[in-house]
Image (cartoon, rainbow, N blue to C red; front, side, top):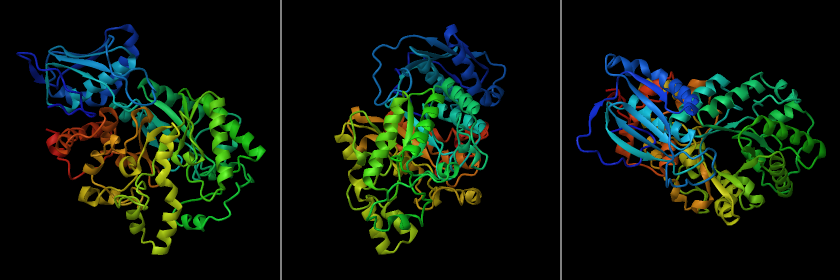
Length: 532
């Protein structure tokens, strides 16, 4: 049995007399085509932390190699959603000489190589066979929030490596919020001067982007407007406030008890509009990928007409500078045009009763101990959410799936999952408003269950918000072991039986340890069996 995550497509039948041999031993990485030498260098770097253990188990065995070969893959199915990379389908062959990775593109060869790395480092044995594999979803992303929970550019490289090992291909960076502005922009020194001194320089951003590109991961920057603008206001005091709705039911005051709210900026003010255009122009100029996220979530209490004008201006400006805009689902309430990309996160309201499964809606209000009157006011505020998904589909938009009940990784772990020795470490991790969930629940998520037409699914993206993160160890503790389940849903298209999945996952803890990554040793996983 292999322990690869995301799970492999069904392998070809074993040939008569197929051999089986230990995975451990002496391994090299070789490019059969000179055009793949850069990919080979990247694969060597990804494999390096694990080689001491793999080699020590059989140091005198015959050398074997991961061989990278350019070869077209005929009749490969087209994945769902927005393409952020070249075709990624591949074939691998395991035999006595090693593992041969074949694909028609460098991206496909690299995905094959990550499978080879996992076969070597997580399994006890290798059996001769061939496997053809490829993604169900073209966009497979992870959001990280350095605006609130800053990590260095060097630490983000470690996140990129983990994402790549699990075949994710997008790193969405939430770079601005009330808590901080994290990207230096030429000609706008005020943005970073007003903060706490923690940000990515232009060179660091470019270097991170190059590092990610070598691993076939695309950076998608997010500048969140017109709400979540505290850092922008700190940099440019006196920006006019957007008009507020005449009747907001006191929702600004109410939500201010649970989250940091800053008055949204008014993009119908000429000076503010010019400033925001300069910001977006610089972000687009620094970004190699084809997408820029404009936020547009939680502009609490803002007049609808002004909010709609702000969303339209943000989208128009991103397009003006050659990128495709993405916005959070609240933007759908201003109208959806065919091809608009909208990121869906507020699931659980579709029945129109404020909650569907007691997880993040009714369950959250219960966890917060809200009075019946306060709970009723929140239900009224969130009522429009129930129609968002249908509105996006009717308008011909593309849905980027980030449902918070399934792929928000900033929630606490279920108490039953946390071993005694990690209770103190994890006590303050994850938003307390989100009930903890066991790994089995998250691993059971099926993206198809939402019923979105295939041609309107943009992709899948896990989200790790940073309110409770203080450094890379906190980040990876929340990320692992949950991220592989999202990666499997995105690549393979749906969940595997729990016993199969947890058996494979058990062999990944030592990979994270060898990479120096903190993770939760969840009690429902037999990690010791995986180390055997």
